[in-house]
Image (cartoon, rainbow, N blue to C red):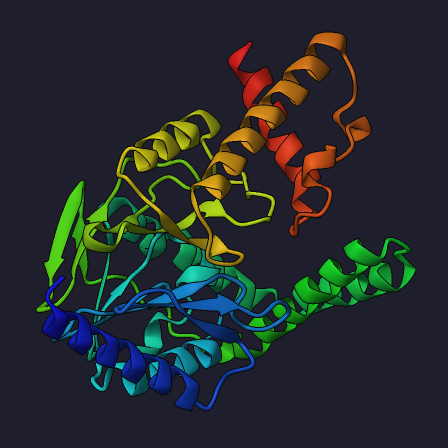
Length: 336
């Protein structure tokens, strides 16, 4: 390696680390230096972030991937991005339509261009918009539901589940507090298969292989650094959420991500990870399909299925039962 290039690169890394350290911090996320150009914003449980975000320094522009559950968390993210890169945010990418990845969009416009797949934007402009209107019309019932969750929380004896329920409850409260000020903001630019954004020092490929976690999922691939930002297609030590999922397509998409030659993954939830966590998600989906298929075959109630040993320590435990129910519905519907 040319010694001058190496020396300049080390200076760049030092400056980036210093800027991360100089950021005042946020209760919503922890910043993690991944490479010379990529900083992960890992969500702190029980706050208005919920899902992870990423800051990418393109050299002559700044990109943010996903915008958290609340504008308050997104405001801290925007401050972090601008202070670390030394320039305003130019691009925001929504990996999928779920609110914990999109509700902070309003903070970044009009300065930044928001990007998603065409299908994701359509869902955000219809279903998501209608759902937010319903939330506003039913705030009293939603607050009552949160109160009931608090009662259940006090009665829970499993300490791990109790901790997770407390995190969920705190995030729900933050969401309700920001709801009156939420401005539903949809992407301005869309793509259907691939978009490439070239910066002076970093190139990012926006790719979609279809829908697995949701009806349409975007990944961001940085080939020079063998990094992929997956949204919720990959989670690190968290139960995947199957509510809007196509499990078979999800596994197919993960196999396509594997073929990119990835070494580092910034997941939708959990810490920065590797292909091992991608394999874990594939295994989880396969295990869930097998468990429910066997239950249907033997006429066993899915309520009797316990969390397998491999996943007992994972977060998002409360999604296990709803995941079983989702797969049960898919299997029984396919048989009729």
